[in-house]
Amino acid sequence: MFPLPSLERARALALGLIATGSLVTAGPCDIYSSGGTPCVAAHSTTRALYSAYTGSLYQVKRGSDGATTIIAPVSAGGVANAATQDSFCAGTTCLITIIYDQSGRGNHLTQAPPGGFKGPESNGYDNLASATGAPVTLNGKKAYGVFISPGTGYRNNAASGIAKGDAAEGMYAVLDGTHYNSGCCFDYGNAETSSTDTGNGHMEAIYFGTNTVWGSGSGSGPWVMADLENGLFSGSNSKNNAGDPSVSYRFLTALIKGGPNKWAIRGANAASGSLSTYYNGARPSVSGYNPMSKEGAIILGIGGDNSVGAQGTFYEGVMTSGYPSDATENSVQADIVAAKYAVGSQTSGPALTVGSSVSLRATTSGFNTRYIAHSGSTVNTQEVSSSSSTALKQQASWTVRAGLANSACVSFESKDTAGSYLRHYDFTLQLNSNDGSKQFREDATFCPQAGLNGQGNSLQSWSYPTRYFRHYSNVVHAASNGGVHTFDATSSFNDDVSWVVGASFA
Image (cartoon, rainbow, N blue to C red; front, side):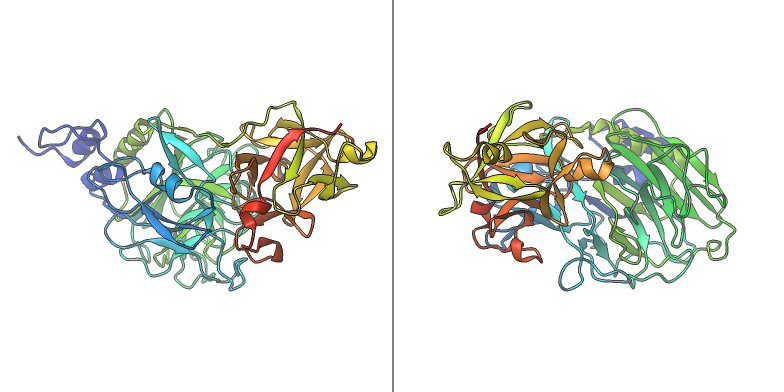
C-alpha cells in the first residue's frame, strides 16, 4: 500500500481509516500529526485524544481523607472511566487536581500559582474545579468536564515544546458555549511563564466570553477571540469584527492559530456541522503583536497574569507545533462531532418536583429539628413545628422552580415573598427579589445531589459546584469542603450539607 499524502491521510484518519488498512478511531492528535502539525499538549477529562492512548487523563482528590486517584480511558482511545471517579468520590466531595498531558511531553496542568493577580486561596493559589460540576456523555458514555468558576484556574509555567517568540502554533478547545461571563479571562493556550503581564504579544490563547474592554464581535456575544495579552482580538485592529459571530452552541469548538504575520479564528458547533472561519489575516499592527513574543506556558480558565474573574467549562483541547491547515482542522472537527457530546445528568438523590412546596430540614445530630427559613433577606435555620406561628411556617416554606440558570436543576422561591429566591452572595445565602440578571439566575440555581451523609439531598451550587447549602452557627452558606472561610470547615461537613426535603409548612 502506498503512503497517503498528509492531508489525504488526515481526512482518512477522521473517517477511521489508517494506511495499514486496519479500522481504527483516530483521535484529534493523530489527525494533527498526519497533517504535519503534531500535538505538543493534549488535555481532556472526557476522552483520549490519541487512538492508542491508555494513560492518565486526570487526577481527583477526595475531601474525606485527601486521597487521590487517576482517571484513565475505559479502553485505548476511549472515553474516561467515570465509574472509577463515581466509586472513589461516593459520599464525599472531589476536586480535579491534575489534568494530564497526553502528548508525552509532560505538559500537565495543575493548580495555578499566584501571579499579577493572586488567587482566592489563602496562599494566593487559584481554586481547583469540582470533579462533578460538568457531567456529559460521549456516544452515550458518562464523563465529566472541567467547570471553571471565578477564582478557579490551572497552569503550567514550565511547559515543553510550546511555541515561543513568533513560532507558529495551533490550538482548539471544546467548551460549553452557554457558560461564560464578561470577566477576564476564560482562556486556554499559550501564556507568560512568570504569571505576570510582560507586554503585548506575549500570549496566544483562545478566549471565550462577553468581555468588551478590548474588542468584540457581532451581536452581544459571547465570542471566540484571541487573548494576545493586553488585548482580546476578534480580528485585526478594529474594536469590532462583524465577521466574528455571537455563538451559543451548548458544545462549542473554538480554534486559534498563529504564525509569522498571520493568524486565524475558527469555530463550530461541536455536536454537528463544519467549521467556519471568523478571521483570517495579518497580525494586529499595534506595537508588540508583529512579531509575537510568545513565552510557552499553558493556562486554563485564567488570564496570563492570573486574572481570575472569568467562568467557563472545558472538555478537551490541544496545542500544536506548526500552523495547522484548514483541511487538518476540518478533520479534527469531524472527529469531535463523531464523539457525540451530549448533556449529562446534573442531579441525583431524591427528586425535587418542580412546582411542589417543600421544607428543608437539617440532618446534623442536635440540629435535626431546624429548617431553612428566612427573616427578611437573612437566611438561617430555625426550630419549626406544627405549633409554630403562621408567619414562621411561611418563612420556612419554599416552592421548587425550574433552575433559573439551568432548567435541569432547581431554584427555591419563597412562599411568603413571591418573586424572591434563595441565592448565594459572597457565599452566604440570602433571600432576594429576582432582578432578571444573568448573575442572579446563576446565583439562585442549585443542583440536588444524593445527601453526602446518606440522608436526603445535598444542594450543590450550579455556578460554584464545589459549594453546597451548609448550616454553620445556624446561618446558611454556600460552603466548600475545606475552603478558606470558617464556614468551609471540614468537621461535620457531610452532615451539615445534607437536608431532608419534606412537605412545606405553608
